[in-house]
Image 1: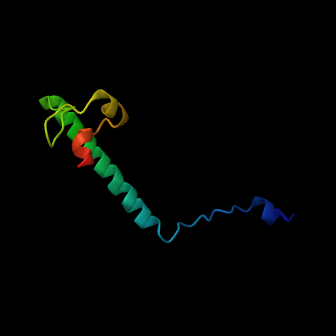
Image 2: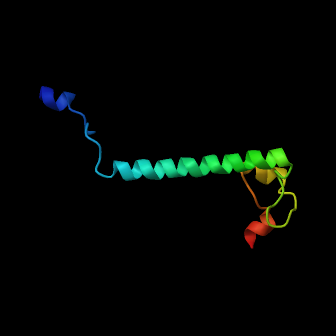
Length: 79
């Protein structure tokens, strides 16, 4: 094996042509998640966390344990 083959990396040092698009998509996802967390914190502050936005019923601890940012109960989510 040549020295160049042993030290060369299969990953290019230059960015992929679509990396700006990937970065924008990742940033948009992060911003959306932050907005969801801020909304949940607001619901905690105003006492509505754990209540369905659609019908006002309790969302239930099992669902909140799986999806702490849930905004709708299982019944309304199935509609």
